[in-house]
Length: 393
Image (cartoon, rainbow, N blue to C red):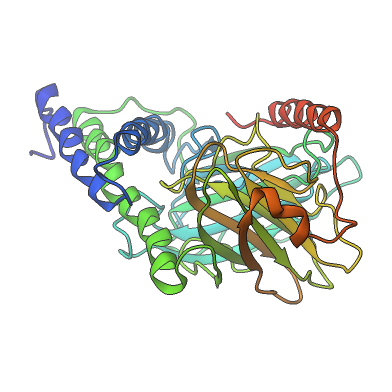
């Protein structure tokens, strides 16, 4: 296909048609429900790909929503992710209002997931978080990205390498709806103010990139969960750094689960003494976050109930067992659990134990926090309102 001219639309559609073969990377390629979910995921990829490729460019960047609304790539339910394309040879200015959100993390790198081949040059180059921000009495902040710090500049300055081409931002909330989100904007200081119209060659290139995103993205995240399965099997945890895609200050605890309708999986872990942030979430078999607005499929350090022995215990099951730390499977008998230790002083290895749901109480401390149906109903209502009060789109 030519890179300089526009092709017939059917040629671009052919790029999508080839992606049906990717279902072979899933755990049950012959299962009809898997196939339906997989088709849905391909459309999720496309909805995300347009924004990724067409919305902005390094000369005229904007903070664009990343995975939150499409649930791709098991986004942390506590995070709102932003993406902005950069050119490391140019200067950028970020301005905003700090708000009261729990954490703010800026991650600079080369090669955005899905836009480069897996293992094909994606690198993290530097990191900035809320502790580095110079925030005024009015809550405002300014960040300058440049090779050298200008004389007299009193805001937050951060150097970026020449090969940097992307910025990912995580806005992390512990108490949904009760923390004020960060508001911010970005501009390139070395580009014309007006954004030019795309020419034919540029549209063609971006079309081909967007329509083939699944070819790069799906093998990447299917590979993550398949390698966990190969290393530790089912219903067992491992610690994983995800050096090429995760945060340098964060360690993940990953588990491939398989839980029948009449079973429950108990997750138990010690807690670090210093634990600025931690959580656990449920993902489906395709490495997407399971519905987290209208279901309790995640728990964080703010919402978790800790047992009297100092341990955190959660129960993954299909039916509500009346346990406060319930992880709703969302109707999936298999998938993954992912937890995060962020900026913690230690990284305990959680344990998982599969039991019969009818015998669950025999395997939990007598004082594990319980909830009534009315309490669960109210918690879910507050959850869905809190999630919607955040800017995820």
